[in-house]
Amino acid sequence: IKRVTTHTIQEMKNRGEKISCLTAYDYSMAGIVDAAGVELILVGDSASNVMAGHETTLPITIDQMIYHATSVVRAVKRALVVVDLPFGSYQGNSREALNSAIRIMKESGAHAVKLEGGLEIKDSIIRILSAGVPVMGHLGLTPQSIYKFGTYTVRAKQETEADKLIEDAKMLEDVGCFSVVLEKIPAKLTKKVSESISIPTVGIGAGPHADGQILVLHDLLGINKEFKPRFLRRYADLNGVMTDAISNYIKDVKGKSFPNEQESY
Ligand code: KIV
Ligand code: NA
Image 1 (cartoon, rainbow, N blue to C red):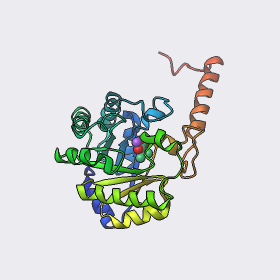
Image 2 (tube, helix red, strand yellow):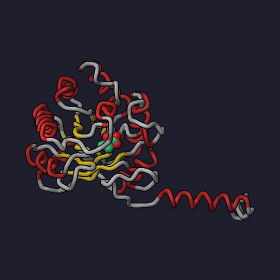
Image 3 (tube, rainbow, N blue to C red):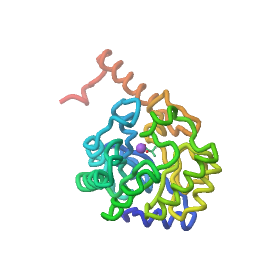
Image 4 (cartoon, rainbow, N blue to C red):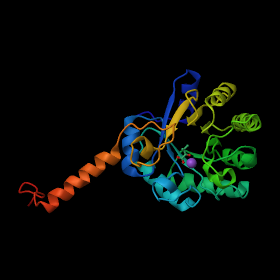
């Protein structure tokens, strides 16, 4: 199998082919996602919500991210594996950011890292890139800053915030990021950004004009029932499928029909 690299997805943008991306956090799911054929798998700090049950992405640690990333890398044969630097592992200074990125790359075997923010973290991004580690940017709704924003609503509806986002995106391209995630911003702004930078944009809740799309795997599969923002399309009701399967198992155990003779030694 030919591995997807940062160059592969750049070439996809160049020829107008959309890039499909999903999150994964563990070996079993990552194997399924990779075999299905997405180009990029993000070990997102959304693991803090989806895997650990925290309300925000802030509590997850770098060691926990490395545990998830290591499991994902073991399963993936084709996709580009990108890992989120978690909150607190890169905001201090560029040296700390570089150390965190190096730990993730060395200990997990992942192919790239993702950091939230623009100008504020420019030095850190440059330093990580100088070490030869590909960096993906992340602009718009940046969940590690949720307590600054106050809500998870759409970002950059106002012109000043939109202008800053465009500037940040251009900076990310200039310093050498290979791609940038645009989260929960108006579709029009995504179009403008995607047309004004040459590196691929990957949208979530950012409309159809991004060069690629990403969703949280558990959301797409319908594992959590409560989370239903407008941008989410559910491709399965795994919550229902799993609940039915488990209910049937319970029924069979209680009714003594499981295990039967063929299922016994
Ligand atoms: O952590 C995550 O899942 C993400 C994506 C939603 C972009 O950052
Ligand atoms: Na994230």
